[in-house]
Image (tube, rainbow, N blue to C red):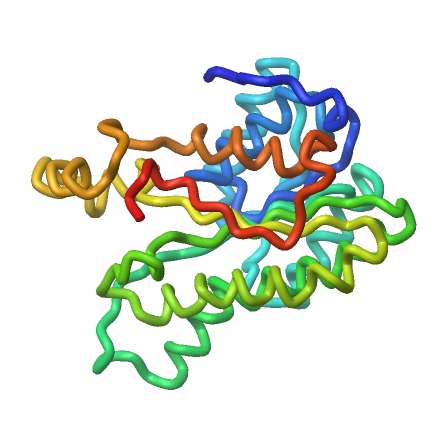
Amino acid sequence: MKYGATYPSLKGRTVLVTGGGSGIGRSIVEHFAAQGAKVGFIDIKAKESKALVARLKRRKQKAHFEQADLADIDALRAAIKAIRKALGPIAVLINNAAHDERHTLQEVTSEYFDERIRVNLKHQFFAIQAVVDDMKKAKNGAIVNMGSSSWMVAFGGMPVYTAAKAGIVGMTRGLAQELGEHNIRINSIAPGWIMTDRQKELWVTPEAIEQLMKDQCLQRTLDPADIARAVLFYASDEASAVTNQSVVFDGGWL
C-alpha cells in the first residue's frame, strides 16, 4: 500500500467511515490509520471488518469497528455513539457505504425502491445529523459523501441506485450553506469504475475492461487507493477552502 502524501492535520483526529470493512471503504480506513487518525468504522460484515482491525494492529495502527446495518437508523445512531465513546468527538465523516445491486425498471417494487434508498442514500443524511453537533462544538469539521459517476454516464441496470447517487449531490449542496456557518465543509466524490474485490468477482471481464479503455481517457484501471487518497485531501486542512463541491474521479470516463 502506498500512503502518498502526509497530512499533519489528520493526525489524532477522530474519523468515522461507513462501510469501512471492504472495498473502497477498507482502503479509506487503511489510509486514515496510516495518517495517525483515530479511525472508527461501521459495517454489516463482521468477518471482513475484524480481519481489517487485526491487519492494522499488526502494522501497529488502530481502528475501532462497530457492526450495524446502516439501513437501520437506530442501529446507525447507536454505532456512532459507541465510536464517539471509544475515540472522542467526531471531526471527520466519510459517508462511504453503498450497494450497487442490479435491477430493472419492471421488477422494482415500492418496497424494493425504499430499501435501495435506505441502503444508498438515507443513512448518509442521518450519519451527518448524528455527528454534526461534535463539529459545531469544535467549530470545524469535514464531511465527504461518496457518490458515483454512474448516473452521469447513464449507466443502466440499476436505476434506483443511480437515482440515490444523484441525490447525494443534491444533499451535499443542500447542506453546504447551513454547515458552512459553523466552519464545517461538505463535499461529495464521484468514483468511476473502481476495481474492488466485489466488482472483480461479479462484473469484471476482459470484454468489459476492453470497453472501459475505449471510454476512459486514462488507459489503466482505477483501484480503491485512488479514491482513498482523494478522500484524505478533502478531509484534511489542505482543502480548508473547499466545500459544496462534487468531484469526479473516474479516469476521464465522463
